[in-house]
Length: 116
Image (tube, rainbow, N blue to C red; front, side, top):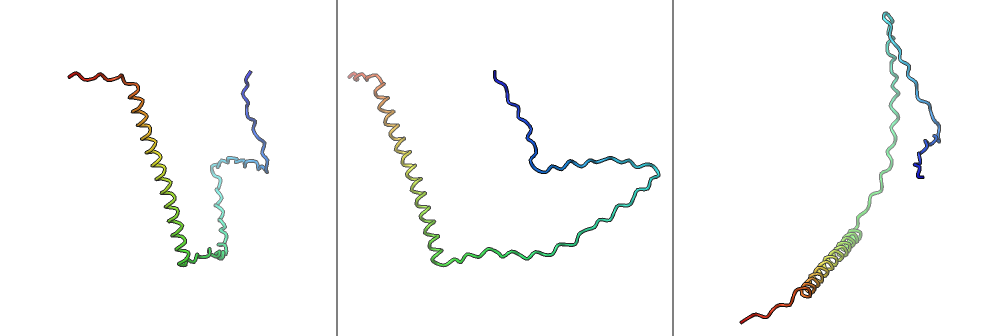
C-alpha cells in the first residue's frame, strides 16, 4: 500500500576535514607543568586606503522642482484611487440597503386597512 519515503543522508560534495580528536591528559603528582608559551601577536596590518566615497548628488532648482512635481503626482494618484475605492464601497452599501428594503417589503404580509 502506501509506504513512507525515508530521506537518505546526502553525501558531502566538497572537501571534508575530519574532526580533530582531543586526547585528555592527566597531570601526575610531582610532574612539572610547562610554562605557557608566549603568544606571538602579529603586527597590526598596514592601513588600507579609504575607498573613494560615492559621488554626491547635485541638487539644482530644476531637480528639486522635478522631485516635488513627482511627489505631488504620486500623492494625487494615490488619493484618487483611495477616494474611488471609498466611493465604490458607499455605492455598494447603498444598493445592498435598497435591495434589503425591497426584499423585506416583498416578504412582509399585506397590511390591513385601519378601522375608523
